[in-house]
Length: 119
Image 1 (cartoon, rainbow, N blue to C red):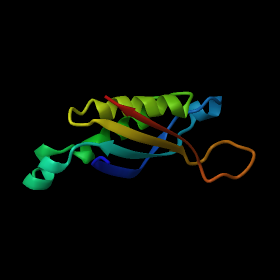
Image 2: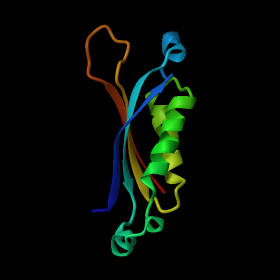
Image 3: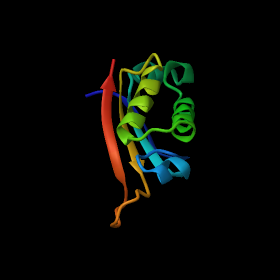
């Protein structure tokens, strides 16, 4: 078992997909993070400096989704994981990237890629 910070439902418009229209028009994406980090020190100290600032993490993730462009959700998830792992205290991260309005011939709630990466 491990400690974790959960940041769920980060919603950002982005241009990701293999179809030309997906690269041209923004579409909604949602990112969920499970950030593996030892929370004992922060739990004892009640000090932000002893943990990962999830507001900063969410801001950086939003920037990746909103300002870059990838063909595959898998690639987007890898870039997000790399970014989160750059925070020194993070031991591992599970990233779920959801495309909320995929261009498919049938109705689906979303499509998603989920990855786990660690140091």
